[in-house]
Image 1 (cartoon, helix red, strand yellow):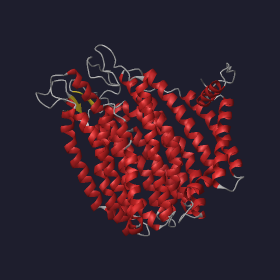
Image 2 (cartoon, helix red, strand yellow):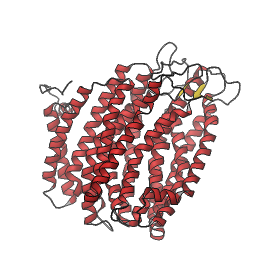
Image 3 (cartoon, one colour):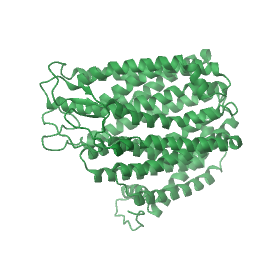
Image 4 (cartoon, helix red, strand yellow):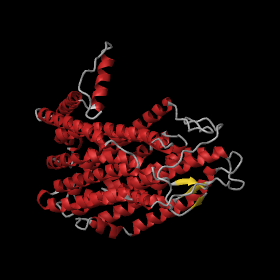
Length: 580
């Protein structure tokens, strides 16, 4: 494998084919003169099911982790110190496990597998790729981990200069710095396994991660206090990487040994193509830095209230993003084949479905935030005042959730149009305009950060944590608007009137559902009963209003459910969805 300068490759790569006769796999090998066959529908359904179940299990364990943190330590200067240290794994995970590493290495391993089929007698391109990249990655990750640990005092001072207990934050940061190396290894191995159509182990990494945290937290919190959470984070990261080593080695051994000369049509990795992805990921994570920087000057516990509110709020966004996680290969396949119309249709459908899911969750949070927080967190050191403060932040945060979900949908096809690997014989394009478009997501995020900072600075003196949450919502919404326009400029000609018209109907349904749910949730005093009744009201009202308004993403599932319950024909005479 070789590398070259980041010469801009074409925004839309030509489709590649591979010879038949490869080993049987859920995704069939490409045939000469034709496009690669799609994975069997049954396999895709199974992969989605496994991913959804394990992702839900990881999220549930993460919520249990947060519940235990609230129970054992409440919201005080100790948890504020830990959450500053938590910034390290919170930043490393998107960069090294999810966005950047995935966008770089999944295409690289996929192309290596194609080359393996095209050159059955030559050296194994997969092993060559591993041999050429993994040692350098380990060196870079080790250096970064060591540098983070040594620079912990300055990092804490930079992130939270007004922190009440900086010494504890430095100690926890040095412990969490150990996560950088195993996180990077886990991201690399997960990308390789997904390229081989092995999804179970990668989907389980956050289960292993949270099991490690919970194990240390439950057994050692009485001795080490909040430091036990930091030690648990480090232990969980090691379990995360360890879970993938065995499956990865089995896949690697299944290939051919590295022998013979490198074929002329070999894999060329463009490492600097990672920079726009990394820049976007880091600037997106910088919203947390701004919150903690400004929050450190507020009363102790503020950062903790923001953290608990964000964790609860993001469950709705995570549920919405499961949709595009599964459909992303379909979009990437259409783009690789040059079928922009199919990619556009899929992205528009994903935007609508993700908006429906996240707006339903937003309506629930607006209606039931106080009872939900009381039900989840109000025990031990987490008292009624913490509940009221966290619930208020959740309600303000919720206004930014639709933008968060839409960015998650849009960024995948956006970066899919920027190849990070190519064959040695493919020339790169030198279009400066396309090169600049690579950086548009990061630029949009920087502008969103500016809005976050300005709104936070202006509102925090009067509104405290609510001002920080409002800044977050305003900033991320600004970024989503810019990225929506950028996706059109990139080459995916979204029908914006159609998309935004459908979203307006969903927004109206969510507003009505939130009002109805809040009225019902305020009646019972018991948090469990309030949450159940309020949530049921929100769901029913959203379904009724969405169907009545003609929102396609709501109307379709509702009518399908009615047909399933009533086998007799159901005539759909209602109003069509806006613009459809």
